[in-house]
Length: 279
Image 1 (cartoon, one colour):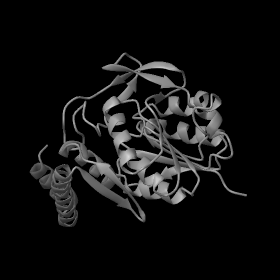
Image 2 (cartoon, helix red, strand yellow):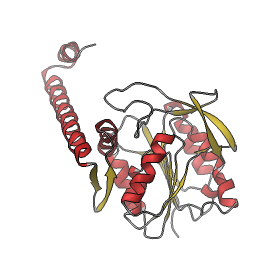
Image 3 (cartoon, one colour):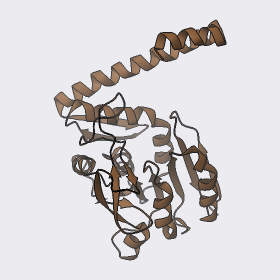
Image 4 (cartoon, one colour):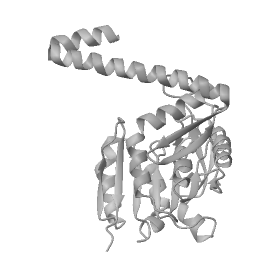
């Protein structure tokens, strides 16, 4: 349905007040998209861009306009979640960025004095994640793996093509890939997070962010030992299947978190914040 027909339907069903509100929201969205279009091209011409949330800031490489635009959109649409994560971080924290993409959370977290451990299975994203870490002088531990409930390999499925929200597959910043039970477009290594910790390949986390496009249950199960440890204070987890929200909230409570609730964000996706009370 076109924007015009949507507007006509809104006017008929909800009246002039809602119609005018809808027009205002659409105009703000258009202005935001135009701003991103301009900023992404300026950044690509300079080869870099700097993004901030509150008093945290980090520099990001700008290989091409499409990948920069993807980062700018995440920075815009996930600003409430970014601010919440950064507010929970303390100097010396070990921050796990599970599904790190190109490092938006990782680089901003490092600017707050956190030790960053990033997990990202998609090769183009990993390459840009490493460049972003280097640009900011971050000594991050970057693991080119998917966190799962079993170690081995898993299928990774990409949704090819470019739209307003993502660069195409094979581009840095691609965010629509997901772990699948089938072979997918490629196979990527998978590992249990607890195994990495037990083997000394990663320190136990104190704050965790999980955004794995629907594979959150497997990632949590493979990291359950670390998440049930009292030193892990806060977990943020994006939930891509709304029907799984109640079970996921209960799962975090079973892991010993005192509070597990939905975080209010500007995104359509659901985000859970689980935290432990401090004595």
